[in-house]
Amino acid sequence: MKCPYCAYLESKVVDSRPTEDGEKIRRRRECLSCGRRFTTYEIVETTPLVVVKKDGSRQMFDRNKLLGGLLRACEKRPISVSTLDRFVDSIEQDYANSLVKEVSSVELGEKVLRELKKLDKVAYIRFASVYRDFSDVDTFLSELKALQREKTKE
Image (tube, rainbow, N blue to C red):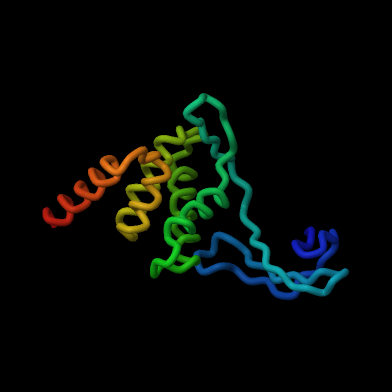
C-alpha cells in the first residue's frame, strides 16, 4: 500500500477491524519509511458501476467524486463525514442490489438529489445548483419555491 505522505510502497498493518455496517475492513497502517500512520478500507470487489455521461461517454462510478460533491454541498452544515460516507454507501449499495451495470449520470444525480433532500434542504439546494447548472436567479428561486410548497404540504 503506497504511503500518502512519502509514496513509499511498503507499510505494515497496525490495527484491523470491520466497520459498523460490516461491509468493509478498516485498517490502520504505518509506513515503513517515514513512520506516519494512515487508514485504508478494504471492500469486496463487485461488478463495477459505469456512469453514462450526457455526452455519451462512459466512466467508472467514483464514490470519492460523489463524496467530494456532497462534502462541498454540506459545508458548514450539521452533517458528519460519516453520515455522508453512509449516504454514498447507500447509493452504491442500491445500484449493486439492483444488478444494474450502467446508469445515466442524470438518473444518478436525480437519485442523489432525492436522498439529499431528505437529509438536508440547504445541502440539497447547494448540490442542485451545481448539478442542475442553475443559470440564473430565477431558476434558483423556482427550486426554492418548490421546496416551500413541499414544506407547506407537510
